[in-house]
Picture 1: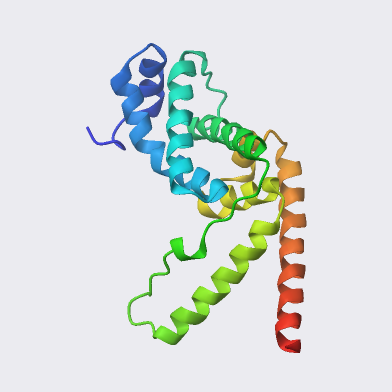
Picture 2 (picture 1 turned 90 degrees about the horizontal axis):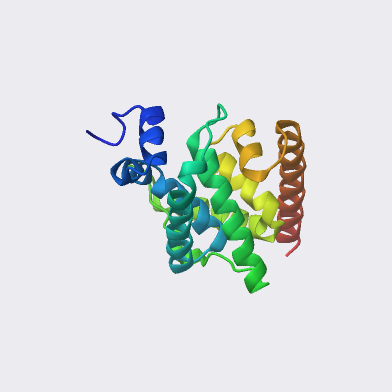
Length: 190
């Protein structure tokens, strides 16, 4: 059975009763998404691998306590990841950035190299600005645009209401717009 051919409700029930193979199916389905989230928050592959492993170890140890409240299982995993990453940042009391040279920019088929270079420079500038945002806003953007979660799912991960997520999202986009405009004005003045 492939990882997407199962009824998640049945697999969750089996996993919560101690079936390691069922938990393995859940792991296979979500490990890449959780790793991506953690990586974007830490900026380091090794830390992301370690924290992702800890997310799934914690999930495996506590899955017997998991209760389906009508939201995706992934929201529970993201909440665990969110808490572990917050602790990781608190323990290090520093803000680590994702090295720009670790982010590949793949040209699309038939695209001119000049367009690819401009797009790469624009992405780099946006990433630099995003990294200056508070961790909560970075988390919101990762969950929204990288993981494609709904506002309700993001609220569950971040421990906020859907309305609070919408408000934070609006304020974050305004702040990004203002920072991009400031940056463009500074570039034009040079």
